[in-house]
Figure 1 (tube, rainbow, N blue to C red):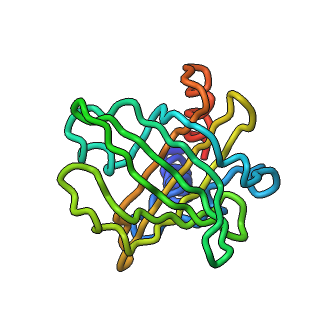
Figure 2: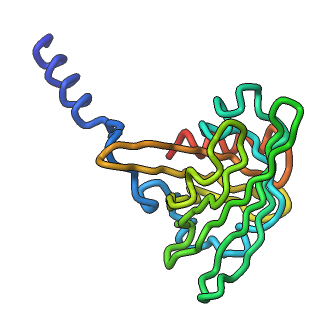
Length: 189
């Protein structure tokens, strides 16, 4: 019996998903099924409050607890015809507000965007440090409507190593029940 229990434990451990810190997951690996079939570009626009995050562009770069984080997203077109989300993102750090301008090009896959940060304004960071980097942004799941929300993940890799992972809980309302719903979705993915 002991040998069988050990063999079963080894088999279960081998079958359990393991985090791979060398390759970012593809958008389809993260997304709930409804994203590819139901998400519309219009679902990505509006004023969103960031209820929670895991993102070092906010902390520890803001050495104080970042507060009042909002994202005002609108759909626009580049001159070449590419549709994008113009994200006017705002963070309060140490008593001052910092307004960031982020751009997210839409792709042929719903919820798989290509992000750009043309001009960094976060304190203590060189302004053009990220201007040449495109970072994948994945809408993991969403809810439509006045109590709608977006759960997003960004991941950047370089030379077979993950450099950055951001997880953002964006909601149209500040509400504990909305956050709990989003948290349950995030933990299930």
